[in-house]
Image (cartoon, rainbow, N blue to C red; front, side, top):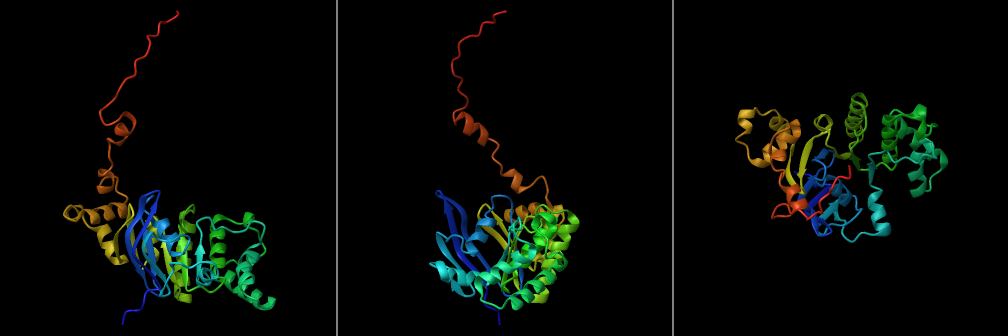
Length: 294
């Protein structure tokens, strides 16, 4: 029996200023899995994440969390849903005037009336999970970028969420620190059984942590498949790749970071000329002759 998805996006469309940023996107995320959402800049992956967490509503289609539609949720009702997931923002988004301990304790104090001793235990458990308990009294300015990401993750875990959202968790980190964050994501998924949704364009990270992967391109969902499927496509020989459908060749180019392929071929080299000079070609305004003075 297939489990009911904890996240379901059905034919989701989102427009800004009349331009479709997401065009009929479908995506289901199941309990306990790690779903990686990837795509180039402007593909719509951050917009999709914001729709899922309720930052704004789709213009068409439906987003469902924990089996219920988010359409029309406002105020306290939306807050109740948001208590059930945590978010690791790209920058960590810590409060600089608070210690790491205070950052993690904040959401617990805001949402629950608990004895200080219970809060203390909860905060220390979360900091220990990310390896920062010994740094609990430090401020964000006193720690490295990787430690800020881990502290942000501890805060995301504060309310024991069922879903964790990661927005570019490896961005701005050196390779070793990035690998440590990847290991932490996998470790937490195993220990806590949480569902993870990771938005990234870092392929090393994606293939390390993903159970399934979803590829967006210009607002379209090209493919939702297992990590193994994507890995086979990435490793397909050039001779075999030439016979693949265009969408799969596009995905393969993205996965491999190849300089040539459908992504680069589709660039309209005439766009600059049409934009600057008009469709009929250049027109040169009449200019008075310049006579040198010396």
